[in-house]
Length: 283
Image 1 (cartoon, one colour):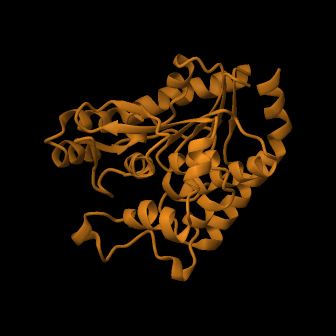
Image 2 (image 1 turned 135 degrees about the vertical axis):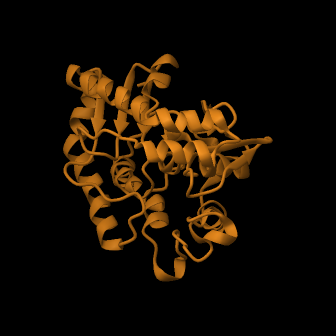
C-alpha cells in the first residue's frame, strides 16, 4: 500500500460524514499512508494521522459549553460567520486537544490543499514540525470565501483549497499515487452550478484579487469535469469511492441530531465497503 492515497473532500459540516468513515477505519487500525485533505477534509485528515477517533466529530457536533462554530453576532466585528479562533486555536490547545506529538512522529504523510488568493492556484502543503503553522494551514484550507476572511501565511493570503482543487485526484496521480480512495461528501451525480449573479458578486468583492475571482467563477466547471472522471474511473475500478447515499446535510447545518445521523451514515458506509476497499488497495 506504499503508493496509496486517501483523498478527503470538504463541504464544511458535511465533513462529519467523513469523520464517521475515518473513525471506523481508525477503530480497525487501518491507515492509508498518504492523505490529502481539502477544506473541512483537512481537519479530518490531520485527526486521522494523529490517530484521534472522535475528535473531528466532537469539534463539529458541539455541546452547549463547547462554544458555537456559527456566530452571526460577531460577523461585523470579525468579518467571519464562523468562529475560526475557536476551531483552530482553542480546540486544539484546550477544548479538544490535538495530539501534535503523534502527528509529527507518524510515518504517514499529509497534504493540506489551499488556494493562493494572488495566483488563484491550488497549493499543497505538508507540515511535520510546527504545530501553529499546521493549524494555520488547516484554517486557510477551511476558510470559505465570503464567509470567513483570508488567512495570511508567509505574507501570502489564502482561502479554501476547494476553490482551486475541490477533489485533488489528478494531483495525487501526478504525485505518483496509483491507488486512490476518495471520501466524498456529496451524493453520486451531484454537479455544481454558478449563476450570473454569483459571477458578478465574485468579480465585485474580489476585484483586488482578479485571479481568485476567476478561480471562483470557473470552480463549478472544473469540479464537474473532475466528477465526470471520478464516476468513469470508479466504474472502471481505477479508483475507490465512498460517498453518502441519498440526501446530504447543508454545509452550515447546526442541528446535532441531523449531524449525528450523517456521522453514523459515514460509519455505516465504510463498514459496508471496508472489505472491498481492502481488496482494491491490496490487489
